[in-house]
Length: 300
Image (tube, rainbow, N blue to C red; front, side):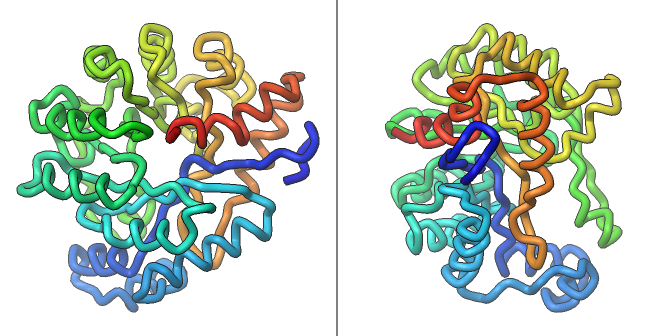
């Protein structure tokens, strides 16, 4: 992709795979069909075959010159969809799967997902109301740590799922479980396992930076509009500057939080982040790390 720093193989660390299973799950919660969910949101109804959805994402990325992206299955139990997507284009996608470790059979599903070649497990402690230090979480981390080139994504901070609000669905999340500090002891326990905190900690920037400072295996993903900045009166340049000062360019992962069609890949997020980095005067080598080189290195 052509950037202000030259041609960079940009990699997006945060793209949601809103599969047909995702629409059906929301429909079940809202008492609607998947078709009705698509109509209510104004989003395209994904094909039943996730391989077809993968090809749509591959085309969207190629249209913008994006080299690779992490696809995240966005409801627990949807590992098969993201696995099918990755199988279609292993050169294009890394596969992440959402897991609630407290669900029955969660450990078995994690083992199968990693055996199928998926790259990272995504934990949402506040959404599913558990501590990241719970023994059931540690059992899943034991599985991830036993396979080289795997990572753990842990959502911290404010969690707002816009589609749930649009559908008038309740979001009974519990922010007691959203502090990055809870990850400190866990990251120390698994020094060979990479942990990714998205959205710069989503309102817990200070705490996320503290954990990253103390744990060299903790990375920050830069994705989304980062609307949490309003809580602290910050702008994107200030957030990036603080993150670079503490974690360095090698532990920042560019992401957009793209999710649905017809919008597809969210170029506006890339544009805003690239502009912030350019205004900061970041070097070409650091830009290449953040925008393209860091993500594939997680999975070597």
